[in-house]
Image (cartoon, rainbow, N blue to C red; front, side, top):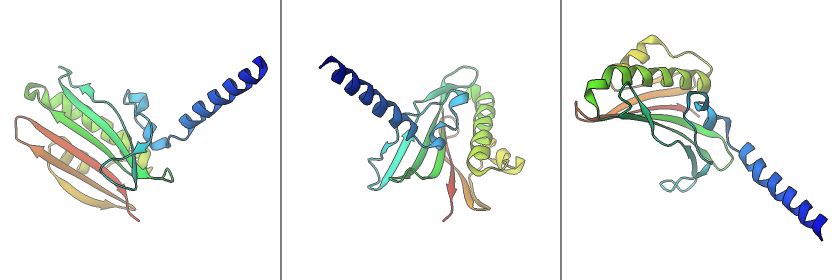
Length: 161
């Protein structure tokens, strides 16, 4: 009986650990930068969509602003878009926060598309200028939400079908 329990326990551990491997690679794109996502789960806002998302990461010199990462896909574990958000509440720390956000965007764009983000689009993001552009088989967009003193940026990179 003890050996059966040991086999069942070992099998259960294998099943639990193998579910970690089911996490799409895109969910781990920013993990080396300290932005870790959770499991790949059903997205409550969309019926057939799944998402892995990170906690808010404090950024900037004051660590009072935040970034969060999302990778959206389908039930077949194919990621169709990645999104990086920025919440700016500490205006005095805006420059360092935007520069840090730009670094994360550059890394994310390179990992997701396999190409470098042009300085033109990086500049638009850092200067909070909304845009939407097709780049090869991807769309890149940045949206600003809020006022000039407290705002959010949402940068989305999406595969075009």
